[in-house]
Amino acid sequence: MRFSTITAAGLLASGVSANLHELAVAAGKKYFGTATDNSELTDTAYVEILKDAKMFGQVTPGNGQKWQFTEKSQGVFSYTSGDEIADFAKTNSKLLRCHTLVWHSQLPTWVSSGTWTKEQLTSIIDTHISNVAGHYKGQCYAWDVVNEALNEDGTYRDSVFYKVLGTDFIPIAFKAAAAADADAKLYYNDYNIELAGNKQKEVLNIIKNIKDSGARIDGLGLQAHLIVGSAGSRSALSAVLQSYVDAGVTEVAYTELDIRHKAIPADTAAQEQQATDYVSVVGACLDIAECVGVTIWDYTDKYSWIPSVFPGTGEALPWDKDLKPKPAYTSISSLLAAAGKGGAAPATSAPAVATSAAAAAVSSAPAAAATGGAARWAQCGGNGFTGSTTCQSGLTCQKQNDYYSQCV
Image (cartoon, rainbow, N blue to C red; front, top):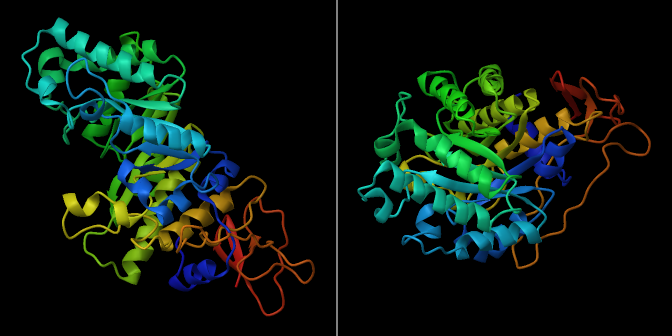
């Protein structure tokens, strides 16, 4: 669905809470979450939004559980950074998606530059995973066990793991992770696998190879680092999600979602297109029962990784650098609300951004007045909707899509 600038502005002005995790759960998903990083936890206004369990029901450590932080020197393990995020998740009632055990990047030189036999590198992988996943046993809803094993064309990266062990390093890692934490969901995670192509096809082979080896793989993570206007249609995205389910995983998830503008600052039309693209991705997850949730790769442009890696691009997230919600936020929340069981109340606005140590209170307005029909911006129709289909005097019930109409 596409929302006009007028609609988005009106929704944001109404003052009604629209909490993404709460709406996602009502729509049948397990969570709506975000990544974060240790340095950001000193930003009081940022944390006020982050810690809201109704807004984000899941959190992913951006860096603290990666190999360079957990085993910088061989056999010497440190969990300080990872534990801070894990403790934050527990304190604030969030699922923890743990990230990541085996990745070619952010790898200590003692691993990447070593001269290893197959037996030695297998032992190194086993030891690392046994310690790290063992340390977090019982805390992680899921682990990204292997991250980004593939090149863009679907061939394998020339990493130390592939050079020494070939494709066997992947089932080796999954077997070790299953032994270390039998209850965590085990994922393969990669980017540019959201649409059909050679890389997506090889991921299907990875799933098959893991299963054929006797190892356990539960989930497939699609990072979804996308570009405005090129994200793909909802139907194309959902078809690819289904292809992974058909290959044998029991769940899929968008794990690192952001949708960057090719030029910034983005104008109104570009922001609307970004909102449409976010709706396509989140909508695809809604279309597939096995899609358990969506994680955005941090929630605010203030802490996005995009500008430092792709200069001149960015503004990729649903909140801007001042922690103010953008049209993408409004469209996501409206989509989730419309998909809610029994016809959810309309998604309208984000909670007020804290301008001091204490966040502004968030109020919740009724979808309809006691008499006289539904209030301005309230839902008044859509497939499965059971509430009032008439609006208060002076308002008109306008259809946004088959699932959502609102009083304007």
